[in-house]
Image (tube, rainbow, N blue to C red; front, side):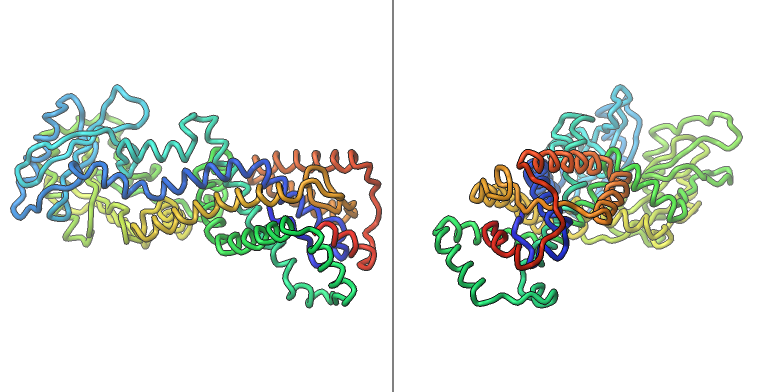
Length: 493
């Protein structure tokens, strides 16, 4: 909510003051949504580390040198819930890792799986917890994730994060433009020369304002500098956050689909038919002939898992893996690298579990560029890609963005009301020329089509702005000269 006057407001007619007011309105009315999203996002950034701490007794074990057979571990895990089919197997990678077997609870409809944790040393089960999403989020991390995503309000709550993400980039860029407009460099570029009389008048005005004016100026400077340093993060969080949103997210998907080829799904068919269906983390399908194939018994899944794991390692898949058992007897396994700390790609292979023969390969390098970009953006946003250093950085940035909102309210409180606005709305409230209204209309149409919540709220702000102008008994006039503007802008500063 940096409302400082530009160096030469009169030189841009009514458009520049309108940018200032929209920045102010967004800070006042969208600011609370950004504030909540930033605070919950700060906690969300640390959630992978919080999860490891809370569930350390399940995720880690004493160092293992001679683990029990993977088949035994899987059978012991399913014995805890014998009525639940096996959905995934996460074999232990490091000596102190536990093995995780994820089971399908068919009575649930929220996509939740039941994770059973096994000590590889003895093959004994050490506990089980509900898990969610392709990342296997455990309850504490899921709670933090849902709080950030929708405040645990379901579908209506999704609108708050979409509104915050839709405006964050606009507020960030608008603040940068306003901040640059205050610098001496901009004054030099547009040819403004401050006279000795003007400097004396401004010095007298600051002296008359006393401590309150000096205090507000410090907040303006701090707000501008902090916002400038956080701009790149704000743009990144806004862009990646919108990919998960309800309305803008669909537009993002449509745009990406139009700009790039559809990524192929890995083929897992044992009948030779290529699988062209939608990708995803595990795409196992029925036979091409249309005849229903028999499900694979759990004992066979357990027996084949080690063969699949060995083949995946031979194919160059490193680090933690997810093994997806076949859904039917005419399908093979899929082995995929998990997105974990310090990993920037995830390859996958499909394997015939009975013979260890490779069916198909899907290297990350072969995915379309936008698919790669989406993956990188998501795992950066989630604080996963670069581990604890990234999580701490994102947490600090989230707190910084929340502080920007608070500073904006403090700045408003210290300047209300002014001669040129109601309750601190920054002035001057000049009329816009036809060409300037065309620019506004074009932006509103473009941004509003791609980001519906931004378009609707921006339209409301424009209507409120015109209503406030009428309340001030303001009669629109043409932009005035630089000389006639200086006294008023001095008073507004």
